[in-house]
Amino acid sequence: MTEPETKTAEPEQKSAELGSKSAEPETKSATSSPSKDVWDKIAALSPLISGLLIFVVGGYFTFTYNEQQIKLQELQTIEKFIPHLMGNEQSKRASILALSSLTNARTASKFAQIFASTGTVSALRSISHDAVGNDKAIADQALADALDRIAEENSTLTNVEVSYKSKLKSTQATDSDRADTAYNLNRLAQIYVIRKQYDLAEPLLKRSLLMYRDLYGSDSPPCADVLKSLSEIHYEQGKNDLAEADLKKARAIQEKLILAKPVSQAVDSGNTGNSGNSGNSGKDSTTSTDKQPEKTGKQPDSFSAQTTDQTPAQKSSN
Image (cartoon, rainbow, N blue to C red):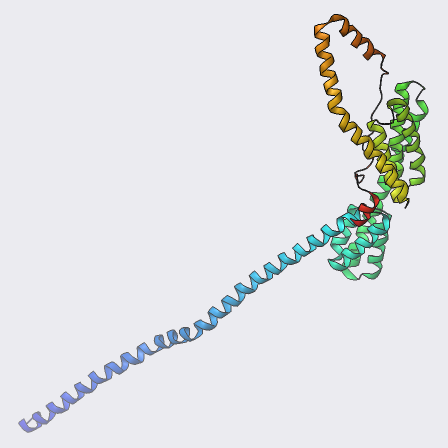
């Protein structure tokens, strides 16, 4: 090759080298552009993703809070109806129907089973008649359970009634047996009150009251307990005047007993001191104590968990 051809070939080679060098950055830029596009897309979607996460988390906590508020409202509603569920049969029926409307059939059915009676059974029958689907099945099951429970309670009460009647027949005329008779009369009256048979319970309580007055005196604790029981029965029968009178008598007896306690304690302590100082006085006190009639027999239990020292007007207001 001649010298001029060699010189012309050199510039062409240099230009080719420059072209290859300029192509390298283009290749590098083409290679890095896909990763850059991915990050751009992520940056663009990040507000949407974060907003979605906030929405999901906020929705969960809002749902949980609302569920807790609903349960709290149900508890407050149930608390208001508890006193009515311990009242008469009409009050129980109305309470169960109200619970079914304000809460749900399941809650109403549970409390109808707990306070099983003729009133709650009537309410369950109404709920079962009007309900559909799952609520109807729940009410039907609760109705069956309530009826079984009432039958079991009646069977138990019947056995207890027979037992007390047999005890009343076997008692004699001694003071001890008369005290047992008064106690058994009182307990048998409780059976009739549980059954809402107030006409049968009232004469038994009156007989028991007469016996306790003869045995322990008119101002004795057993008489106060029986008077409270009679007040409760008269209130349930709608005889508010008699209920008020019986309750006032019971309160008067209790007040006398409270006032008499410090006096009796002071007399006992004085007698103890005198007996230590003089043997003869000790014998006299012993003799006077022996002369007191012996008070034997069982004391009456509280007539009912619902019996309080409230007047009928206060009970109706509650």
